[in-house]
Structure formats: C-alpha cells, structure tokens
Image (tube, rainbow, N blue to C red; front, side):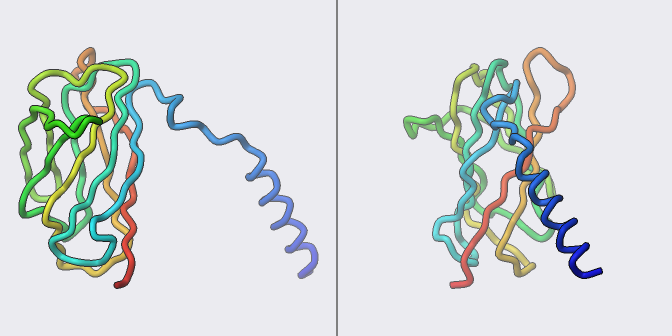
Length: 154
C-alpha cells in the first residue's frame, strides 16, 4: 500500500512538472514581477514594492487589494523604469487602493509601484497583493494577477 502511494505521488509530480508554464510575458494586458520589501524584514515602516509590465494595451487604472490588517501610512508612489515619478492619483480605502493614471500607461512600459511606510496588526512573513487593472478599451476591471512579498524574520 505504501509503495503504491509513493508510485502515485512520483507519477503525479512527474506529470505536473512536465506541463509547460505560461510565461508571464505572454499575457495580453500586463504582468507583475519582482515583489520585495525594503528592508527585507518584518518591520513597520518598510516599503513593499513590485513591478508591473504593461503589454499590448494601455492601462488607465490599477487596483491593489491589500491583505487584512495592512496599511501604508505614507501612500503609494509610481515610477517608470528610469526612476521618474509617473503622474497618478491614489485613493486608499480600507483594504483597496486605486491608482488612476493622469495619462494612460502606454504599452511596453514598466512601472515600479512602491507602497511606503508599511504597518500591520497581523504578524506574517508573506504578504499577498491582488491586482486588477482597467484597460483603456474596457469599462470594467480585469484581474492582472497577484504579487507576493516575502520578508525575513530579522
């Protein structure tokens, strides 16, 4: 019985690992990458950040759903790949942050989103942010994916 379970587990792991992964660059609208914290520790006051790569269609809004108990006391900053601030208005409401871009973010643009002065009432080492976007040609928000920010215990 134990050997059969081991064989089944091995077979499943082989089959799952042989399925090709979808490259994030293959997505149609935008993809998210490089979630991290500065400093990389479970500290209040840290900055959580990630990159979003706008693909083939312009992005007019970005919505970030925050984990339970998380706030950013100094708001959110948006920069382009050259480190220049990208004009946007930010609205923070409980567990949801909306970023409305003054001009739509053109295709083939990489943005860095920095959420400043992290504060929480919950202890965790891994934080998940769900992202939604509004494409210029669409009236509704579409899911763009999730980004994980993992911190050390230090």
